[in-house]
Amino acid sequence: MKKSTFEFADSICLSLALSLLLSCPIAGAADGACGASGQYAFVCGPRNAEDLVLVPDTKWIISSGMAADAAIYLVDSQQKTWTELYPADAPRAQQIMGTYGACPGSPDPNNFVTHGLNLRPGTNGHSTLYVVGHGGREAIEVFDIDANGEMPVLTWMGCILTPDGMAANSVASPGDG
View 1: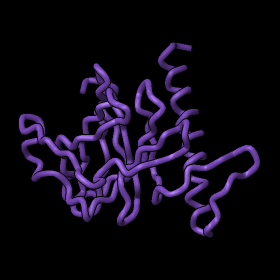
View 2: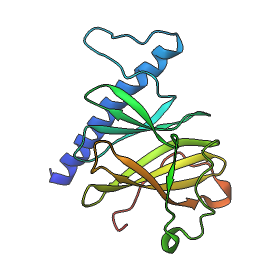
View 3: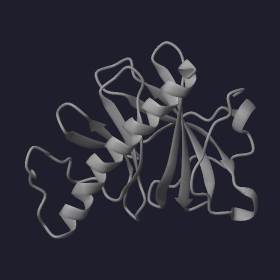
């Protein structure tokens, strides 16, 4: 088996494990209980954690939130805590016009629902996060993740509107960028 096949299999296993870890507390929170179950403890609180990605070389997991009033969440996989990453109190935006000039601007933070996620590792502690965005518009929202500080910082860089307002489910970034 090629190394890339092993990396893909490891990625699938990690995604499945993280999905199970975070999906259970959502169900538990619905009935008011979110305690440990045997040897397993849960991260409780993020609304409808739909998809998960691991920020490269960190303890941080990013989760989408597929519900009204949800957010993009940042989960500390070691401390089992979470925080709202975007839009949070002061959403960061710096549109890259050369690449995303056709995008009408950053998403409405009061009408932002997220779904599928894809992360493309970059260099110098930066990665690119692609997010299926619903709510005010149907688009692939593009963010820079700066993981150089104590916690990653998310900055919106642009969007790609879906054809005819199509509601996408997932997103993948091709190998050629």
